[in-house]
Image (cartoon, rainbow, N blue to C red; front, side, top):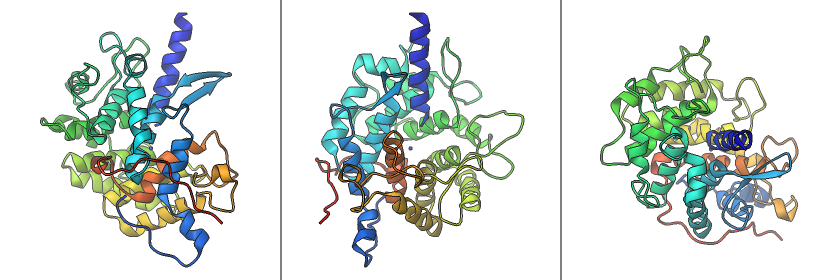
Length: 347
């Protein structure tokens, strides 16, 4: 039973770490091209993939586990696209259900996970809720309790410390929206992890500092929110320097993909690197399934254009719409979102 719980906890943490828009899409002549650049259709497709209309699950060895991290990515995506508000409300209600919430965040005593706590707190804020009272749990107080004297937000767990650049960035973004603001020491700690080339690593204090596209995209947004524009600008310059000729982004020499490109494009738009954002958005639009695709897949964003994979498409779509719309995490709001899951209007 202990082994099963440990395995369950690790899977939930990995889902949480995996961790990821205000301009109107320009008018274009070709109808199919116009369909391929509709983030609302991507949000609608994502909403229709929710299990029981409320959650995503991760399946390992034939067993389904709750995927709170991907479900929160969907909450962000619905806010970014301004659609599926009813699905966003149901998804957040599911994640904040005590058994689901505590399986993700930990019990707050023996187990408390910084990244998960910060991500949920931010999602609650995006949907207009109070992160200081989520079913009686003060996520903000818990998150601040996980900050070390050095400024790093670390996990408190018998399973190990899984905190990383995502944890730190989400913590800064969540706390920036509170009365106390983002702690300067925490922002300084994140800025201090920067690699010599200007990018940010996923894990700090490695023998060789290796910049990571996804981590840099999150760090740049968090540092801008925390009033460290120069540190954010260094990360943005590095992102521009590693953008592929086709507009896409990839990590560690891999294939350009929707996940990394979506997060990078979001950061570029948030940081006013508009030409680079436009190229990244065009890459993402080229991965979106249009009217020529199977009806069930239309609106989804494929991971890398190598053939539509329904297993990777939900996460790829959730993170791609952040780049397609360009709204930074610090500006996301579901306040004006519409209900319903729109679909492409195809002949």
